[in-house]
Amino acid sequence: MQRLLVALLAAFDAAIAAAVGLAVLLAPLTLLWTLAFGVTADWGALWPLTGTLWEFGHGVPLEVTIPDALLVSLGIPTDAASFAVSVTPLAFLLFTLLFAARSGARAARAGAWLLGSLSGVVVFSAISAGVALTARLEALQTPLLPAIVLPPAVYLVGAVCGAVRVAWEDGDGGILDRLHDVIDSREEWSPVPAAIVRGAAFALVGSFGAAALGLAVMIALRGGEMIALFQTAGVDALGLTVMTLGQLVYLPTLIVWALAWFAGPGFAVGVGTAVSPAGTQLGVVPGIPIFGLLPENSSIWMLIVVLIPVAAGAFAGWAVRSRLVWEGTPLRMGQRTVIALGIAAVTAGVAALAAVLASGSIGPGRLAEVGPTVLLFPLVLGGEVLLGAAILLLAPRHRDELAEERTDRWIAEMGADPIGIAPDAEHGPVSDARHAGEPDPQGETAPLDDLAGFSIPKRDPSERLD
Image (cartoon, rainbow, N blue to C red):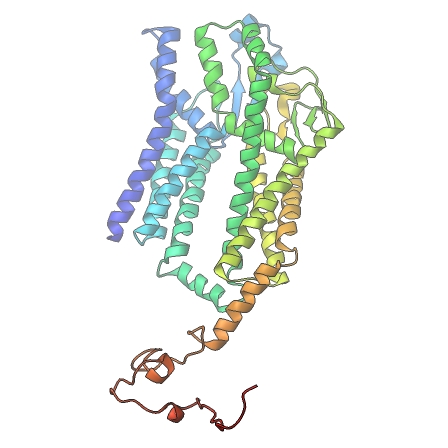
């Protein structure tokens, strides 16, 4: 495919990704705007609100300023009139990330992954800059530079990851192939990078999948508390819809919180609070229905849940080791140690990024500290994954693995033919009729005594057989 066409298609993908993300916000906001204010509503504020929320969904913090009239009517203290909201609703960010990865993979299959990724990022940056410059509100303000930079950064990460994954396997005829050749030149270390990425993917999917399952179980067990908080909110159908949609876009963020709880450090829902398997310490919690899932108390026996990340690491180690054995590349202890450390490091890095986005402020006062600890959570999770991966990767090799390795070595020593028949340059490995046990190709026969390598001992007829 022509490089210009690849660039145009990648640019179109980026435009579609931005348009869909904005439309997902604009469509329900338009409906809610009409139901709340009628046809005489101030439609000029709809687009700035949509753009601001789109930026917020990509990690841009919000600075909320409550008008004075609303402060008086609601009886809000003046010191709570302005506060920051920086806990990102990760649903929008994940959508952009996955869409960009799909576009990058498509560009890599077309043979121009670098050009396609850059083209998509340039278009997404232009759209992000346009949204940041036109979507400005007094009540909800976003810093201009992060609003321009962060959404394209998310798209860049997704596009590059999707493109490199495909180009690394299929080749790109450029920088990745040269890097691949450099790694392959070290035969003992060439499988290590792919094994690290594969193991980290298994560890992350296992950890976050377990956290999502745990969140679903909590919803089933404590759904009554959520419903009670909905009822005490005293909102109409429109307010109920807004609250429900707002909590849905925060579901990926809550999964990060659940994983922090499974890992052990837990998370906070305010200054001086802690929710962890070792104990729960809560003060006054906001009446947000999703906070009804918070456990009221904990037991020391709940620390057994830290085995879940360890099991995810063990699953990753098993998957990597099984793949290496299947490919016939049983590595030495040094390489397997590096693989285990690499799996833990990648997992901790992703967890650290998720913790940065899923923690921060959600309101004034004590609500300025919410979410998992940015440093402790990834360190603990990485250590648990390392423990599980090391158990499977560094354990002594099974006798079946050793037998298979000896078989492979023997076949390699004997050549291409495992039964030891030297191949003939003209007719192949069975062209010599004397070795194949067939008649000579010339159509002639020879006495068995004349065959090279064979002789039949002659016996005296008078000799008695024992």
